Image (cartoon, rainbow, N blue to C red; front, side, top):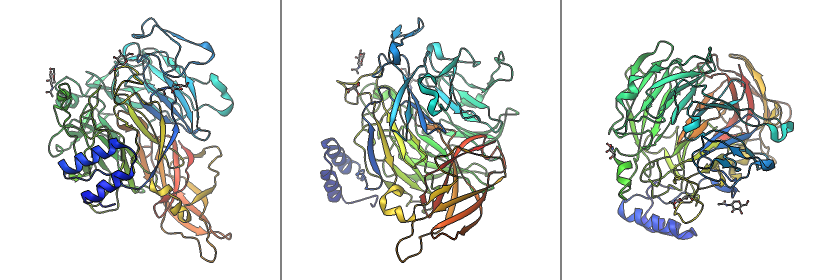
Amino acid sequence: MPQHMPLLQTMKAALLRNSTHHLVLVLLLGVCAGIAPASGSGGRWDLLQRSIGVSAMHMQLLHNDRVIIFDRTDFGQSNLSLPDGRCRRNPRERVLPVDCTAHSAEYDVASNTFRPLFVFTDTWCSSGTVAPDGTLVQTGGWNDGYRNVRTMPACAEDDGDTCDWDETQDALAQNRWYATNQILPDGRAFIVGGRRQFTYEFYPKADPTDTSVISLPFLIQTKDPEENNLYPFVHLNIDGNLFIFAKNRAILLDYRKNKIVRTYPILAGGDPRNYPSSGSSVLLPLKPSPTEAEVLVCGGAPAGSYNSTKDGTYASALVTCGRIKITDPTPSWVIETMPSPRVMGDMILLPNGAEVVIINGAMDGTAGWEAANTPAYAPLIYRLDHSPGDRFEEESSTDTARLYHSSAVLLRDGRLLVGGSNPHMYYNFSNVQYPTELSLEAFSPEYLDPSNDMLRPTIVDPSPTGAPVSVTYGAPLTLQFSVPASTGAPPSIGVVSITMVAPSFTTHSFAMNQRLLFLDVVNTAALAQTGTYQTSLVMPATAALAPPGYYMVFVVNEHIPSEGIWVHIQ
Ligand SMILES: *[C@@H]1O[C@H](CO)[C@@H](O)[C@H](O)[C@H]1NC(C)=O
Ligand SMILES: *[C@@H]1O[C@H](CO)[C@@H](O)[C@H](O)[C@H]1NC(C)=O
Ligand SMILES: *[C@@H]1O[C@H](CO)[C@@H](O)[C@H](O)[C@H]1NC(C)=O
């Protein structure tokens, strides 16, 4: 669908929708702003669960194909009971000293089922990393959970309901509420910022009694008028240094020497991009043996937007993205414009390595309670191989508002799991315009459309349902895959590439630790059986390119990815 469709067509498209809400929105924006926010037709939405009982504020896919979901313990009673009459009795809890409901759940993708999990202290607005052994290491939170670390393993089929969170009190050196994590080449988590914390630290610590932190003046220089610098965007560059973006600019930090090795210019316009002006950011897909890396930052909200919501004014969100080559010694931002403004959009790399999806969020306001008014129902696709000005496409809409405290993660089957949204201080299931969302949806990008079935590769060896494949750095790997053969015609095989994707810890519109690498394909050859191929590839050479842990590997034929397999690189 063209980005600027005529208004009449826009109206027709809107009339086809059954939601009057959309119609009003489309008409208003079509007339007032002169842009066409009508949703396109690409991709598909499916409701997976009407209620999982908790709101998906934070999500992480583990290598058992289960997604760990949690919100916060002081929202009041969730809609999911703890099993076996269990209750949480915590005198330090602010809202319910005795709470028999769960605030975390484990969602099993294959069976589309979920079970409650038990978190003891408050995980509100926290961060996380998957350790090299595949355990989710969640850090920080609020109140009684400020400095706690909680771990959740990838439970096995026969672990039953006893497999649950484990918690360490005061394992962090400082309170980490709204901090960002990035896994390092040595497998530790780099944890930076948080409310009024202009520092970073590492976890795990060689000495558990180590309470040292390292100050990062950049976070003070870029803090907001409320003395905060929350959820900065962090990416591990290919040289092992950390790209850290806050407010409207970025630095490249050598965390080993605590030295700033590069300072990036201000993103044009100077508007803030991190919380509460929550835009989002991705490290774009890396080529095999890369010499360059690029970051794309999209959306956000002008300074002052949060305050103005308090008197009922919802300023339009930012409509621009900035793209920068972070490896360039004299880098500059290239500005691109989205078809519609967005704040609180989640940016997720699609496994074909050719597209980024921007999903969830709002067209006005900011992050924060009751601070956005117009949900962004249609995801955007950003096509990396299109020319600037022609990269965005608006996809089909959901009718569920996913505002503050919503999230999205990529699944191994190529779908996105989308959940959460709670713009209120408590769980508010009724009598509010945008109730606390307990549902889970799947967004299937266009590559999953049956019209692409003839191109779709299927990995046959190693088996996608088998145990993760153990690999080492620079090691060869051989994959066999098939492509459907139609009668009388050879199978449709084009450019075959292999991608490797680190599953993200997503919260507050930022997918921490997200990373996509194209692997070096040495050779792809047809096997005797029609439609079956063998491809030999080489794993990334260093842990700076791919920190140790579990990744999904996909075969991509043209732009159509297979279902992934799990690999474990160490
Ligand atoms: C809460 O769960 C019950 C089923 O246990 C369901 O009927 C109800 O609709 C749920 N409420 C919400 C707001 O999802
Ligand atoms: C928002 O309001 C607070 C409290 O009144 C004030 O301290 C702060 O400077 C304001 N922020 C902006 C960006 O204007
Ligand atoms: C949400 O629920 C809480 C607790 O039940 C209630 O006090 C509050 O007024 C509700 N908020 C809104 C915006 O209705």
